[in-house]
Amino acid sequence: MYLVVDSAYAGRTVLEHRPANVHVISRLRLDAALYAPPPPRRPGQKGRPRRRGDRLPSLTQVLAGRRRWQRLPLVLYGRAVTPRVFTLTALWYGALREQQVRIVVVRDPSGRRRDEAFFCTDLDRDAAFILETYARRCTLEVTVHDTKQDLGFGQAQTQAVAAVQRAAPFAGLVYSLVLL
Image 1: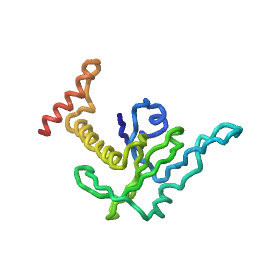
Image 2: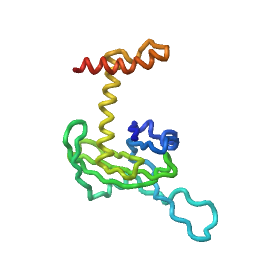
Image 3: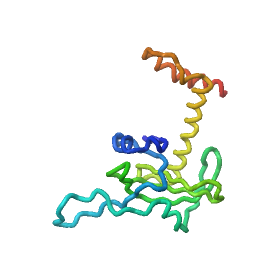
Image 4: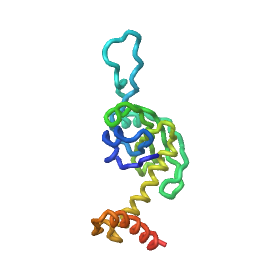
């Protein structure tokens, strides 16, 4: 199961306290503090084991010197695009102390959009899956916004449990009928 959230919700409380079968996909700041995984312990080494390795350069610094980018044809927001991407795996210790994340950095070849970074807690997923999944959340946000604005779903006057459970599905049904 994947939870796709805005970067404001992708903090330590969500990432560290999620169920083991839930993976998170979200945006990552380019100045996030990233680390290498901790080195293995040497035989006979004293003291507590290291929790993180050496600090890696920020993504902004990596982007400044990056020359090789992979072209990745995708369908994002209903349009076929071919952005330049590169991926890496790192430990984002500030938000997720014990698990590495897959990071995808995206560059618009035309230069009209700024560089962006996304992450996924599932290390087996590729860049295309991460970017397409994150882009799909836009349609859901538009639907929720429109049901609140146009149908008044945000001001439902319901207090009984059964009424609350009926209000959201009914608003979604009415919104679907209005669109059709």
